[in-house]
Length: 189
Ligand code: AMP
Image (cartoon, rainbow, N blue to C red; front, side, top):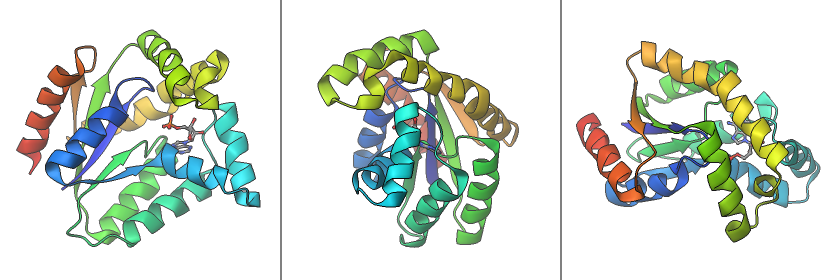
């Protein structure tokens, strides 16, 4: 069973993803990370991707779907995947669900709940450590949050209606939040 992680930027999703991957053997597909690699390549495609990331906007549909499709295609079905940062809007959900269905992969999701303002503050703190340009600009961060609220929350709601998602309070200590998450993942197996 594959796992989708949802949560606003700063919710601790990336950290928890790494721990879950280590404990349960997931291979992580981090949409933002994959796109940042392409952006750093210097190719014309990279330049395009970079312009969206720098602006805090979702990169065009065809680009991200091509990336995720390839990532799914090259992994054997026996390799569980943890998807971080995809799908992020209704169109991505539609195509993602179809790709997963075609690949014969079943999945469930976890949503890490955190107030957007708390996320903004956490990211501003993290930017100083990780040096990400799109994390250092408050306007860009706020645009990413707004995109999450406008486009990604409806995706989470839709998966909720399909009975595919559980929500976990992301406000606590990393270890306490992780304990809750691992409990959920154990039940999914
Ligand atoms: P993140 O690392 O998840 O904060 O994502 C950083 C940036 O990568 C976002 O602001 C978008 O520009 C881009 N990005 C990440 N995931 C997606 C996605 N699923 N669809 C489109 N753009 C994405």
